Length: 86
Image (cartoon, rainbow, N blue to C red):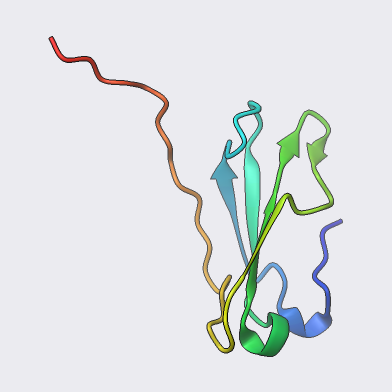
């Protein structure tokens, strides 16, 4: 179970797949908590694995006072394909 550090964090108000950020073949998830720390907000990245999501964030980003980081989150599509010139 994933939880924030306090009820006022509004943990998981926004959740999105992040794609395979760490390149291990499993999709990762980003979770927002815009109410964290005087509404500075946080965004947490949880790594996926064969057994599911890690219960500990692999990356935690923190905003500045009143920035509400994590109010909206979205994954990014990253292509590993390369184009070749002919």
